[in-house]
Each structure stands twice: as C-alpha cells, then as structure tokens.
Image (cartoon, rainbow, N blue to C red; front, side, top):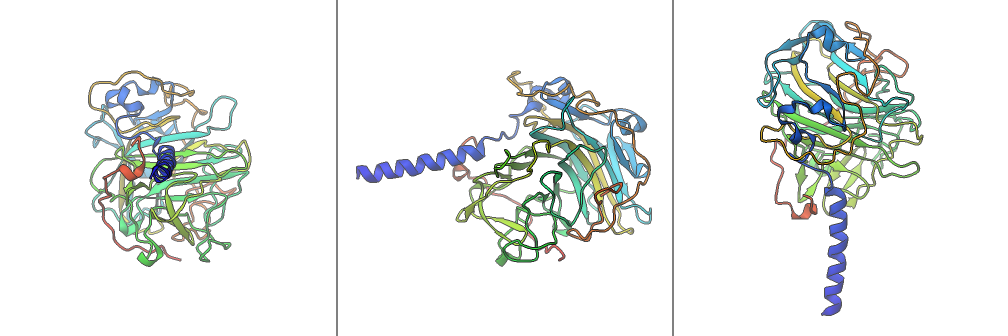
Length: 414
C-alpha cells in the first residue's frame, strides 16, 4: 500500500509539474491591461512597446505603420468596443469590385540596436461584420524576419528558412468561422503525406478534430457582429532546441477542450497527434514537441501585421480594428474595474507612444503590389520573398471549462 501511494504521489507530481509548465500563462484580468482601466495610460507601461488606438486623423495613423496596403479601403468610424476610452476605430473594408485583395497595416517592433524580441504579445480588438463574406486570410499576425524588414517578407506555400523567417497568426478559417492558428516555421508539416513530409505547404492548423473527424475545427466560434479581444503570443526557441511556444486568447481566455489547454502549445503540451499538416489535441495522445522557430540567434519576433485578404473581387468584407497593444508580457482584455496593483511588468521596451520599438513608419501607399500566387492554403498569393507584399495556474486536468462553439465541417482545399 505504501509503495502504491508513493507511486501515485510520484505520478501526481509529474502531472502537476507538466500542468504548471503549460498553465503559467495568465488569463483574464491578470495582465497589463488590469493596471490601466480602459487602456488609459497603458502606453507608459515599461512592458508595452507599441500602442495604436486610432485616435488621430487617418494620415497620422498610417504614418505610424511602415507598410500600408489599400489606403482607400480604410476609414475611421465611431464604432468602438464598449470598454474603450476612445471614439475611433479603423474599418478595413474590402468592397465588391474595388480591384483590391483587401488591406493591411504592418510595422516592425524592434529595440534600439536590436533585431527583435524573444517573446512578444499582441492584443487587438476585432469586429467582423455579420454579413461578411469568407475571409481568405486574416491577421493579427506576429513573426520575424532576419534582418528585420519594413514590409512583410513571407513566402506563402514554402517552409520557412530558420535563419531567415517565421510567421503565425490567428484566423477565422473560412465558412467554419472558428478561430485557429495559421503557422509557418522551419519544421512545419506538409499536407502531401500522412507523416507531414513533402515539398508543398499550407499554414499549419492546431485546433482540429482527428482525421476521422475530417479535421473539423474545434476552436472558439467567431462571433461576427461583436467586438472581440484577440491576443497572440510567440516565444522563440533556444538555438538547437524545440522549446518555442505560441498561444492565443479570445476575450482573455485560453481555449480548453477535453480537460486540457489547446491554444497554448509548447514543449510537452498539449497532448495530441499530427496527421499531415494538422495537429489534433487529444489527452490520450503524445505531448506536443514544441516549436523550432529559428536556427539563427538574430531571428527574433520583430513585427506585427493587421490584414484582411481575399482573392474574390466580388466579396464584401468589413472588419473593424481597435486598441492594438504590443508588449513583452501578457496584456489581457481592456479592464473596466478599479486599477489593480502596479506589480512588476517584466518589460524592457519603450513607452509605446506610437513610434516605440521601431522606426518611424513611412505610411506606405495605396493599393501596393500583391505577391505572386505561391499556392498556399486556399491559393493565396499573399506575398513572395523579395516582392512588395500583401499578403489555471493548475494543471489542465483540473479545469471543468469546456469549449462551447460551432463545430462544423471545413476542409482546407488541397
């Protein structure tokens, strides 16, 4: 009996250690935003690197971004999140027959004398119109280029070079309208063979049912017509290791399914399995191996990218953005209570005054060139290299929170 108890205790200790490793990410009002109700003054926090609240004229706003696509598709509106202290939001509106693929805003986030950060968080509020047509690709997107570049240097349809680049974002995944990652990195999987080998690549997805379930999305429902807080985190790996991470939060909550957190992936969590280019979380599966984002020390997280992309000229896609914050620690949704204690922010960035963390933006131009079609997930010609682009606290087994969301079949075109 004593031996059995000791064995049980050892197993529990291992489980608790593994759970703590995954559950270390904060949620809800545990982030920077809780110290600055309605984000007032958040730009002064030492962990905050960049803030865009769209409270200026459109030319002034665009000057804070280094690459601007389809300026004519952007306008300021008075539709803002209920929690916002501001009066403006930015509408990116791809309209039928406008001759564009959508619109984007891109800028580098780099420290003085450096090429980026080992860990970055980007939080923004997003509202997708209830009548919006299917969005082909969408950002909030974080990534890295080595060296850093004043426009997105992605190569859709190709596995990334660990010395040069990686990129990842959160997308609403077509007519399923459920959130999932869309990720390119040096050890990404191909769709061509069951073991992930091949020479053609789409952005890998991570919140999918098993192959028997037709890779049905299991991420949170995209609540069209509502303002939603979307936050993304990327942590690069140590050189030679596969200990990189990525995570996303919807309205300040990590995503849970079958008793484990599935929207925070890193070395050893969550459990699941790969088939082709899709990861299916499953408590009975193998631990996730972690991300090997880079093979060069100078490749770091160094840009944020907001965009709406489609290849259908007839589509009508209105998307609003507001209250963008980029920081070195968890941010969380806007807080409407009394400010929490100051605490330690753990940041080392600039004050986030709209030009912090990077050079002055050049404002870009209207309807810049779109990249050549390089055959990504849905035939996206987002960009090609060299071209001007477009493109809790406790283990998860203790959680009784189950994911509620639409689970409709959606197969990525292959």
